[in-house]
Length: 88
Image (cartoon, rainbow, N blue to C red; front, side, top):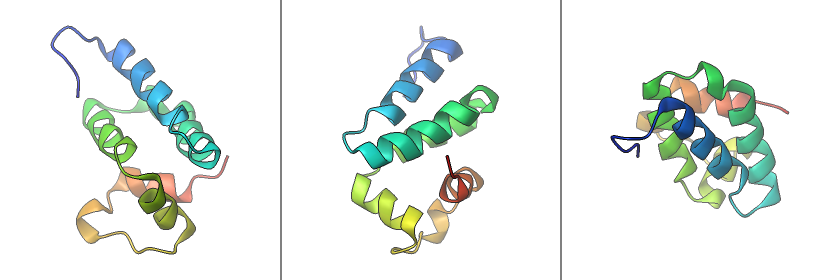
């Protein structure tokens, strides 16, 4: 989460780095590419949501992306849906 002294620009850079350095190359490319392409237009609420998505385990997120696992309705937000349809 953001700290009181963190600016929006620093937060975006931190989230972009985290999205691009997850540990598995596939997720680095998918989530990092999605963040790279869209993070500049995200609102603070969308940055909050991106931070939650970044915190999800790779197998769960990859299962959602591949369609192997159904996304639970409370987590099927517009931002997550945009990620699921994103193609680099």
